[in-house]
Image (cartoon, rainbow, N blue to C red):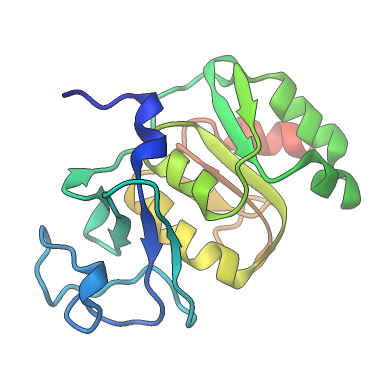
Length: 188
């Protein structure tokens, strides 16, 4: 059976706390990379999990992003007018004075949806959308998504274009649309 954009609701995503290994954390085992592979998803002491079916979304630095045994890849959409974007809320953008930039990005896309937190980054990682952007974040919000998005072939930066998980704000994308999103977001 072929996977399509509607399948994004049939996943589970998990980020492992610390710098453990699959052996130290069997629930994060990545059988395709071996039991001793470092699970470099999160650099704090927090576990994030969204359960909707039986698959687990995970990533290993240098080992790819996966949903079960299916390798994840960001989409190949290269035009903003064909893109689906995700965000936490417009209210959050207004609170930091970025509502005009938010409106410029969303107004130029095919479709937008408000999926906050880790879920939006997972959707970008599996190609169900082209970008996720949020104006108010902490390092613990971004450490796992940074690895997940990058291992799926995407890009994650702050609103200035700096690769970081330090917090503040973030844009995650398939990479092809990253610069145009940053330009529109910062035009106001």
